[in-house]
Image 1 (cartoon, rainbow, N blue to C red):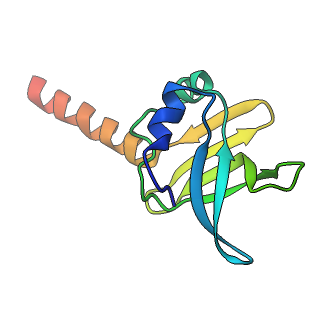
Image 2: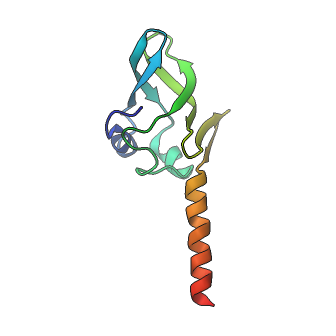
Image 3: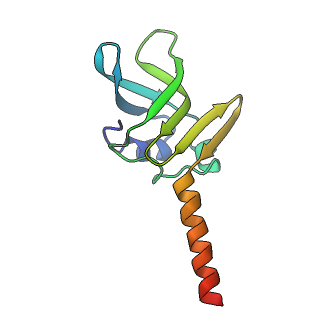
Length: 115
């Protein structure tokens, strides 16, 4: 679960990491999530509005070599709406079903207003 608006700061400055609280083997734990740089995220369709404080996320990835609670994110999923971020090899893949649906609705509305 995102605990604050650090996501917005992450997109502004890729030096920052994304902090989140999660449930682990020892109960609730604070983790630092490391994603691609902000330019790659933006090119993949992510923006400051993509993630919000309080979002419940399912995250998998590679743990830091020093065994700290730092994770390079390979897959980030928000199940409530089907949002999915994946690192596939060297490629970033983002699927935002709600965003795609809003775009389809907007296009339909525009067509109705024209005709």
